[in-house]
Image (spheres, rainbow, N blue to C red):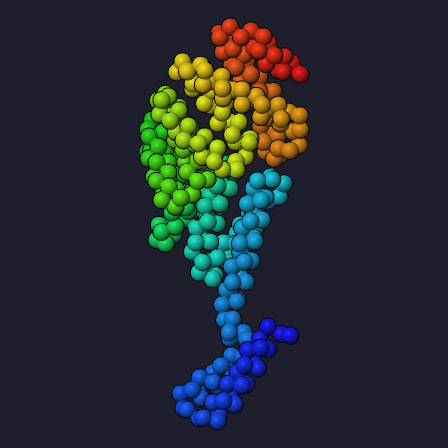
Length: 310
């Protein structure tokens, strides 16, 4: 039975009832209902919009997946999604897609194009009070300011204070992510704040940011590859600050994760496989072994060094 047939049968019954009693206003209502039943497209007047919205969302997801896998060009998917969102007036979807395009152009080493997309995304997200997309856009602007200040000089004043400018963007991004209760964006912003503080040699603040990021990772399902980088950074900073026991603890977890990856590298995304270098593993393992030696734990240190030789 068609989805709209029960509505048609009900309307026919109302039509007979209304015809019998002939109240004028109710007759008009009955006639309108009958028309809607005969033409269900009128009942579901939003369906074309919803279908287009779903199409755009699917294209956006394909573009994001292509970005993660690095096996297809994400640009056609993202541009098609943006066109649809703009056509149907879905400003939330538009800002989300603009942010993703900004990230893509940043990865491609085209900061001016990335800057343009991030600024558009921020403008729209601010107008519709979409805190998550505001956070994403501000993080993107911070990235450009920090990494591409020489090429995006119209945006960042000069390289001498680019870290401080980026710090402001990341802090605003964190505030918006907290307002949106978006843990993923909070973790991203905290990690970037930690990186900035580390570059500025403000190690206590860096550790504080990283520890907050780690706390979020502990309570959510997180990519273990990203977790390993955070553990490594924390281990290095704990060691600099003389917090050797904490450094040893996070290094031990780092080694556990790395050994799992080394046993089965194909489980990593393609991009992560490219980043997984012997140098990356060796330097951290050696730092861990040195700390163990300083604690008089020579046998454990040798076990870690033996792993490097495998």
